[in-house]
Length: 408
Image (cartoon, rainbow, N blue to C red; front, side, top):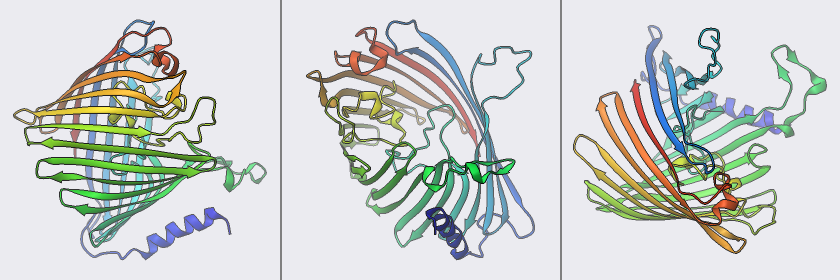
């Protein structure tokens, strides 16, 4: 029996095995209920991140509209559509009436009980702090997956199992199946794994398991253990991951410690992503898979696709983080980064310094303003590793202002 049949059969069996509750968790017995939500987000960017070319300006927009449908107390559905664009990309505003970036962002069924649910369809899925799997909401389209997610509460432990189909290579077309062109199970790309979280005082202990199969990697398994929380004024966050599989043995370590008074906080952090020596096959270079790397490795996004963006040399990120809370939920945040490669390239490891200053201000209940400015001071190795510095070792910059309206 093929693995595909086993996996899909297991998902169906899990759905049928759910102890369906009698409480009104989603809808009403006298007919469906509807709850609408949406978002309008506008972001203006000033982009001077590439040497040798002029500064670019752009305005990005994202519009989402969704509806929760409650069918009965144990069955519901959610549909969300979105339009994402950069202003001016419709070259002819009179004749271009197509919606090139209009898409179904989410569309799934929920089967629910008191302590469990099964979600089937296109969905946003983010694990823990999004080090390995994230929704990447900073990007204009964001990320969603097609697959199955099962989640349950077992005592104090929250546990999840997921199977996402990332690359479908079989010729199952709208006109039907052509058996002569069916490439078979072994050609498809999957993301399979689990997540468990156990609460601790002021935080949690989390275990993540990820199997990436012929999607981003040829075949990899990643196990990550994380503990984070707050004890009195002390904040801490520590994680370690090991990645193995088809010609792969790599690791990741992160440690953060700081002090939070409730008005301001200061923290120091070090992230280490293993790398390979020059000329090797990157088998020891840690792959961040589907992470939301924008929130970790600098807002200027020089290190979104690791290990490719450091030539497989890995990354070491020394970070100082500061946060000041002003009245009316207004926040000021400052992150200072010093980047190195984990392995040398031409006898060097230093990549450069980055400073990110960000402010966040709620305006009304459903609207907020976010603004920031960043600079990057490169070192010699940046001109060899980071494409943006191919034309010189100049200080680069980037800024943005974002207005966001969300309603539920």
